[in-house]
Image 1 (cartoon, one colour):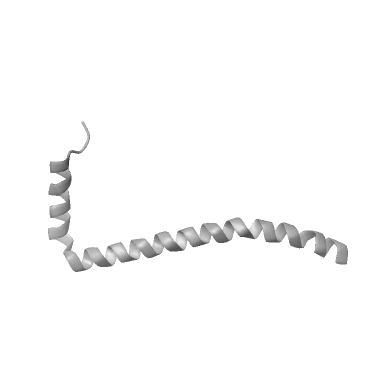
Image 2 (cartoon, helix red, strand yellow; image 1 turned 90 degrees about the vertical axis):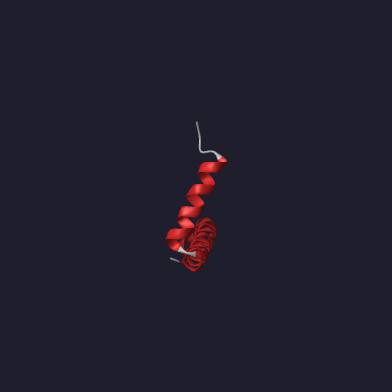
Length: 63
């Protein structure tokens, strides 16, 4: 009872007619950039706790 191939094609054609190819390309590009930025942010967030943990003992020794 899921979406079949015919229904999916009909939906895609309607979306193409409503938004147009140029706007869909812009939306795809923006979405790709957002996903790329999100992944980069997740990698940066994973790296931060390690660097903060390494810096804490140095600041404790100096204080």
